Length: 182
Image 1 (cartoon, rainbow, N blue to C red):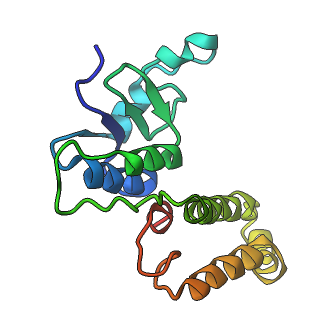
Image 2: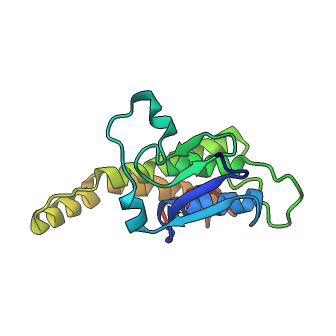
């Protein structure tokens, strides 16, 4: 049975759901959504189907990962950044003093800068050397910092913040870009 309000499913820590939680609270308040916090043992106990084909969209956990947002219409959505952007775009049904409509900017250029920052940090994390040997990993990470994408990505982000006047990516405006990897 679909929920009557959006349900965010994640673990009982900040992790990849922090931006989505803040955006959902920002747009829907405390009572407009459900924050279902699962224990790791409960999540692991769930039967994870290996191959469902197109029926995967109906699985309890559609990607075998969290976070996941279950919508009242029955659709289940994964991917933390997509959930955060969706939640930040929602308009409250009643005025709320705390609502910030620019948590995800409506201006296309400002939204593009937010998306660029999120993707840049994702790429930094994806490309971070992960060798099993600790000494080799340390050497690779030093090189990554000195000449790799870590240096390039951080220089870009620092430049964007500096050109906006900071302290956030878009100056004084907090956006989901400042929340997704904290």
